[in-house]
Image 1 (cartoon, rainbow, N blue to C red):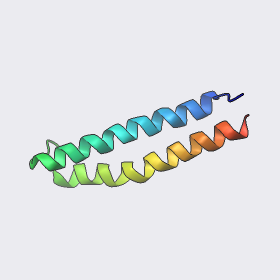
Image 2 (image 1 turned 135 degrees about the vertical axis):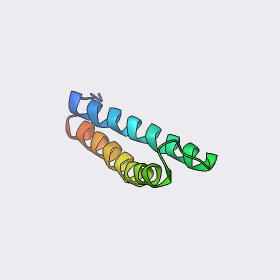
Image 3 (image 1 turned 60 degrees about the vertical axis):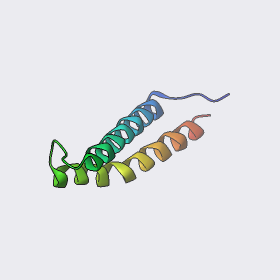
Image 4 (image 1 turned 45 degrees about the vertical axis):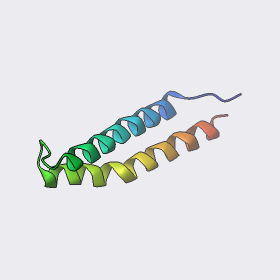
Length: 67
């Protein structure tokens, strides 16, 4: 039986939020004129891509450790 702990839930929630931010940044950059500026939007994108992967990995690792 797989049980999701509150800790893995927080990791998974963070992964979802950072993935949404990454997709939003891609759309903003593709529009040609991002509201926050190109530098800030690109920085958000570059931070969110690896952060999403790390948070998802941490959620899976924590859930597996608590089976």
